[in-house]
Length: 306
Ligand code: FAD
Image (cartoon, rainbow, N blue to C red):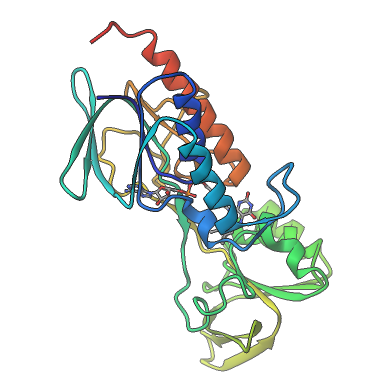
């Protein structure tokens, strides 16, 4: 059995695996895709001390760093169930294997909810973006749309309005869903337009995004706006559907952790975007991966030998 079994190979999982292995304990890592969301990212400019890098490059560096240590890496493997037994945590993989470990660190990340209209996939990283903290500066002086009028959409619009020339918010429902204090802030800004009852139908472009089409749901009229960027803000979904009910989650499905990264189940820890952490970023995920590994180590040294 492992001492620490990390599930997920993104920034959080890689960090957890390295911190665990550096304690000289038996460490394994199961990942569907090493690198995680970073592999879908182009420019990264907020990974502190690295002025600029690209997602796949950072992903390759994560993998190389993990491989510097004695970590049993099981790439391209998907976990499908985890259970706390008397002495061990058992992790079942989709290929049927069952792995045993004294502790586990869940770091299966999250995914942005896609809007699923023509152009979204085609122009990802070419004007279609999901993370305002990451990509707002790429749109300096440009006109962008934010799809989604919930808290994350309106926070994104306020954030973007400080950097870009103009922001158009498109909300499907007849009114914005965000907290009223955010709406007040939004409406106080001079360079923001809000369109409600707007159903986005297509993101248009040639090499990069050049516009958005939407249907006015009250009149059924089709409209086109010329712009250079679209931020899709209709939710971040944690990859936790495979977990049973034993592990406490928020109503959004985020794993609830304490300040050491511990879940409610003894020996099971979690880190990164799959948790209820306030912000979802590479540097934050790495920090929480380190925290969870140190938390798991603290737990291990307090257990009777088995
Ligand atoms: P993830 O990166 O999501 O990794 C999850 C890992 O778990 C992956 O290895 C995945 O394959 C694996 N996994 C999932 N389910 C299972 C399963 N059932 N079994 C086994 N393995 C599983 N952040 C920044 O700080 N700066 C940026 O510039 C930036 N740009 C971004 C651009 C885009 C397009 C996107 C999508 C995100 C961006 N982010 C950025 C956010 C950042 O990528 C995430 O915060 C970070 O990757 C989270 O790390 P994580 O390890 O928690 O999860």
